[in-house]
Every structure is written in C-alpha cells, then in structure tokens.
Amino acid sequence: MGQAVAAARKAASQADEESKKQTLEQLSFLVKAANSKLDHYQSQIEDMFQDPASVSKKEIPGMRAMRWERGYRIGIKNNDEDTASGLNDVIDGTFGAIQSGMNGGSVLSGFKKIVGGAMKAILGCDEAGEQEEQKFFVFVKNNAIIRIDVKIWRYNFSNKGIIAGTENVFCYTFCTSVVNSAILEYDEITYLLSEYAGDQNVEAYAQTLLRVWKTIADMHSFLQRRDLPGPLPKSKIRARELALRQAPSPTQRKQIQAAVDEEDEYQYERKEKARAAANINIDP
Image (tube, helix red, strand yellow):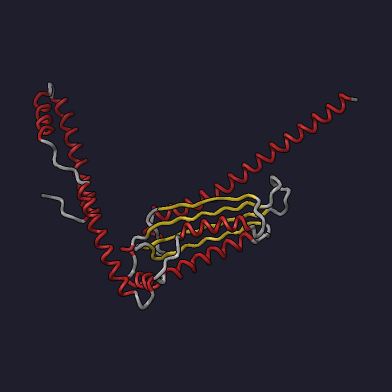
C-alpha cells in the first residue's frame, strides 16, 4: 500500500514538473512572439531611415534613430492601472516635459493625449484576436524638428487555457528621430513653427531659430574642418622616397608605390567627404 501511495505521489510530482515545464516553454514562446513583433516594427522604421527619399513622397521621414523605447507585457488585465501608469511614464519620457511659454506645450500635451488614448483603448479591449495602433508625430522641440513613431500591438486569446494560462500578450515601441529640415517645403516649416510658437509669435521665433541654426552650422563647419587630415610629415615623405630608391627589385618598387597611392587616395577621399559635409573650401 505504501509503495502505491509513493508511486502515486511520484507520478503527481512528475506531472507537476511536466506542467511547469510546458508553462515555461509557452511563456518563452509568447516572449519570442512579442519580440518578433517589436523587431518587425523596428525594421519598418529602419527602412524609413535607409530610404528617406522614397518615404518623403508620402510623409516626412526622420534621419536616424536617436532613442528607442520598447517593451512587452504578458497577461495584462483590462484597464490595468499599474500597466497604464508604467506606459504613461514611457509616453512622458518619449515626448519630454511640457514646455512653458510656447504653444508647443499644448501641442505636446495633445500628442500625449492621443497616444495615451490609443494605449487606453487597447488596454481596455478584451475582444479575441489582434489589435494594433501605428502613429507618427512631427513637431518642433529643442530648436529642431522631431519625429516620433509609436507602434502598439496586443493579441487576446479566445480563452485563458490556450497558452500558459494567460489571456493575452501586449507590446509597444517608440522611436524618436530628427527630421532633416532642409527637405521640408516652405509651407510645412511655416505650419510646424506656427504650431509650436503660435501664430502671433512665429516671426520672432523664426528669427531666434535662424540665429541658433546659423551658430550651429558654424560650429559644425569648424568640427568638420578640425577633422581634416593634415599634410604628410616631411619625415614620412623622405621615408617613402628612400623605400622606393632602395627597393631591390622592380616588383617591390611597384608594391611600395601601390601602397603609397592607396594611402594618398584614402586621404583625398577623407578631404572630399569633409568638403561635402562642411561645404567649405579645404584646398590651400
């Protein structure tokens, strides 16, 4: 009798272990599914960075990512206050503090409400299947034109017992990038600056912004000029000449000359790149 009870306990324990193992495997699958969705979203945004010319025919593209925020939750409850509070912190951190003294404060507040409303709608949705929200915002912040991409996804299972005893999986990603203001149309810049500063203050703010951008352009040119390769030291020139004269065979002289030419070409390409970036005359 004792052996039968022990065997039953062992079988129950093994069943519990097997159940735990299956649950962990299923949770791992859900995490992978969420990360796969986030990777897909990130790839979509990175495609925009790689081909901004094509994107600009339909919308205003960012140049490259300055900040990513991404995360996931498994088994969230509808209108979960803790989850909602954490996501509001993410929204505040992404869009930044409300700026006083400019109309931009109300603009940012409005954007936050739009994203917060989308989050709230998805958090409160218990319909089986997939829910998704994708939005982007372009606005003026910190004397630059910013783009923020927001992508939110949730999947609800038809009942709790399908995978790991959970009801849903939820994930989000936020990407902040800066827009190249040089590609914007006249009316687009007017709209964005007026939205930020207000119609009555836009002219004064435009003058302020122009001074800031000119100062930054001067600093950028200085940084590019500072990075220019200088002339070869005389000692290196003499070493080159000596190596060519003392080469024991024509083949070795050709090899040395090829290395010299390759280095000269590299230095020339660096100068040309610096010239294009800084738009300055770098020749003596």
